[in-house]
Image (tube, rainbow, N blue to C red; front, side):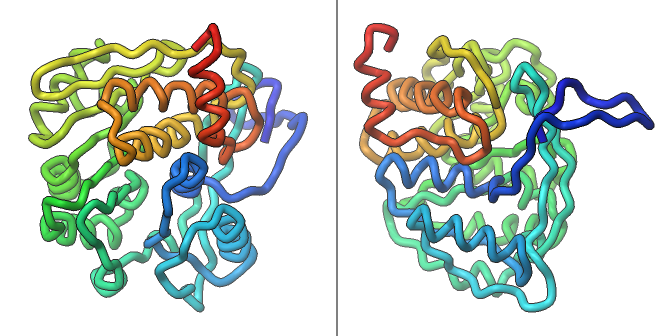
Length: 292
């Protein structure tokens, strides 16, 4: 819903527009797919109008669905409230996606070179979090794990968070999430602190219109953003993450991968809706422009 302002407590406000579309983890998958990666969704989905919509949009993006639909529950939904600056606020009602268990994860056939993206929403859900905490340590080192803790970072149980941090090759979050995890207000300091806790490849802290910070064991580098006029920041971090994963898989250095991800996020925020990640050609065009 696009609002002139957020309503006061007990009040109401008329939206200037609204839409019903799949989002959440779909945004990351669509972003990676539009950069040329083959993608599979290994989470759960339900039976009902929201599950139907999610499967339809997964199919449109060419994303494989690994799990069968749960018959007794629909896919959950979020209400995203977008203000005139493009900033978004969420309220979420969970559904089938929050029922992931060990038997479901056993269906996931991973091979060396694969990348597993783990959503912070899943880590926060009781069933999913426990299953993932047990499953992640079993993954072969040849499988790259990328974790985004998401807006519910403070709700992730300590043992689940510890398991995700320990196995994550790359940890990608925004400034708010980094601050909650480290109590560091400076993004570069927060990124460096998170690197010390992951023990693997590195950390990306997204800093909105400023760009992002990428940190590894031997360096911390701010990577500037591309100047654009934002109309909807919903899904911007997801577009960034999907493009970053695709760039890493293509063999780019982490700093160049973040620069490419910054370009993807910049293009995404100029469009209304969550799954607005650009294609590889559009990113190439921006990077090759005088602004790029």
